[in-house]
Length: 353
Image (cartoon, rainbow, N blue to C red):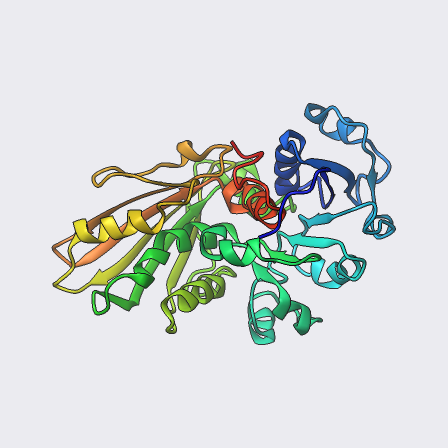
């Protein structure tokens, strides 16, 4: 396990003006072991951070991506890419080659094959060796791997829907055999508009999203589908393919998934619930509700916890698990800081509680 250094770690943020970048800034300014060295934005270059975001009271000036590459390992320990897809894949190696670690918020290092990137993201991955070296940053599944990372490291921060879905379903993968039908998993998700980022899209405008509720990218087309499949398949040691349907809800932040899996006649909810609680016994940010209680999105606002509740429909032999997170915190910035804390030997909750 890495041990924390005496000095603070020096970090930079590329894409700091996006929703997840702003959330990350708020967390890192509160973090007692972090110094922010630079913030990067192509559109805000030369302007001060406080000029755009007065709440931070910082005179750091935005630089562009090219300027950020002038830093070396003496100036910078870690860089966060809070950028859209297909940017970190072209730039992360420049930092890693200098001995600077990278945590990427996009999907650029999450998946495993070029075919998946071509199908779901529309580009071919340009560095398959780097892709293989990336550590997937779902802390509750990869804690030991993250703690053992050698610098410079590359962490792929999971997607928000993926985080809520897999945290709900991971414990089923280690339960008794012949209890669940793994071919029956259905996930219905709903997320606020911030999940789509800051891009200009009429469908995400107030006039279109307000008082509206819609599904999108159904029938396996959503980009988080292969990521969910990848995590569950690894945990269960068998191929799993879920049916995932996302929905857009008219609020800014928050995400909830409802997961369904068919059970056999011998399923016992109380025994499974004990297994479930034992599975997450040492996970500070997992909050499991007692049977009969269900989570709701307002509980997650600006915190790094995942709230989970469940019940068993005996009439159709189906386990139902509800999982909710703040998509900008546990689904993005908070989870990244959780990984950073582990990789540098800090307490996992530092800056997050």
